[in-house]
Length: 135
Image (cartoon, rainbow, N blue to C red; front, side, top):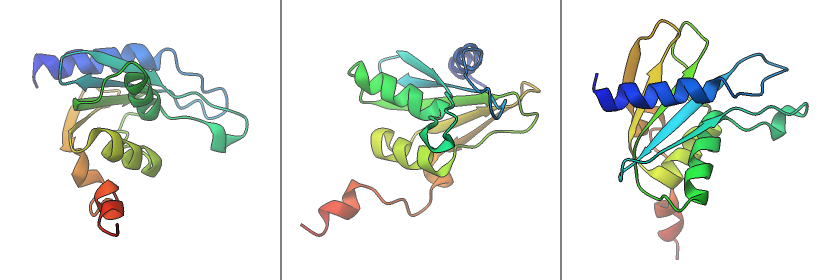
């Protein structure tokens, strides 16, 4: 695995330590890599009304967007789970909308890495192209 992805995973691990998960106890950290090399991180933040909870992946990309970053090459996601933690459906949709296809790097608690393309996690994605075809 490339040093760049190992650094990205390390940033996601640091972000995971900041997670606020008093209800589920499921801490997640994410780090998204911009084309220019900048890394934005995020963690999950829970609310007692679960629907208002935000995942680490969305926190990271929203943070990047709020700082003017618009082009990405990869995102890393980690949790305390001994298996890999894939993104939820909402995160898949937000990531494909705001970042397009990129590498999705998962690291488990055993320090193993798995890299997939985001499009493989959301086949037949609904995107702005669908909206533009009817205008």
